[in-house]
Length: 232
Image (cartoon, rainbow, N blue to C red):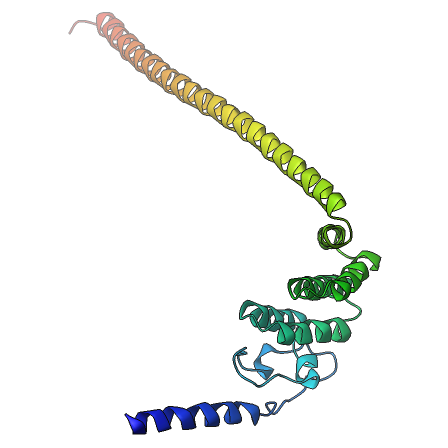
């Protein structure tokens, strides 16, 4: 038992030390004009003490950097998540969409950490950013109102709920209308199919009668020819 306790004690000391001495992987930066590669960095483990440096993050595509930040957030490593998002803001400064979403995520993390002043700073950056997606600006506006003025937030939330319910109702009406039209179309299709089969049967009947008439005429013609032949 004593040996087991000693083993786990050593493991708890050595494992973190090993994690701490992990260095950035050797990188082969892409040539000028080439896209960044996700192969530069192996799958990121948020539980490791290793944190990729900014130089490593610069070599990654924007989606990979944001994914690493989200992975850290999901594992509840909020400080690490902020680190990745703020680097994304700096590295991809010309990408309004990335900057807007990263600022919103940082603001939300600070809100979760109850650091409302810092949260507001990032939400305001989203609202001031030109060409930012409307959806992230609406989220930032709502969170900003939630912090600054709860009454205003409740009003916005109520408006969102009303719009959601109205949209849901509209979708329900539309779905019913579509279902009705599809039912009508199916009925019409069945009627057309029935009419086509009836027409096909009628055409077959007419063809058979025409064939019979043709055969009858041929027989009559044969009789006439036989009657006109000279008797030998």
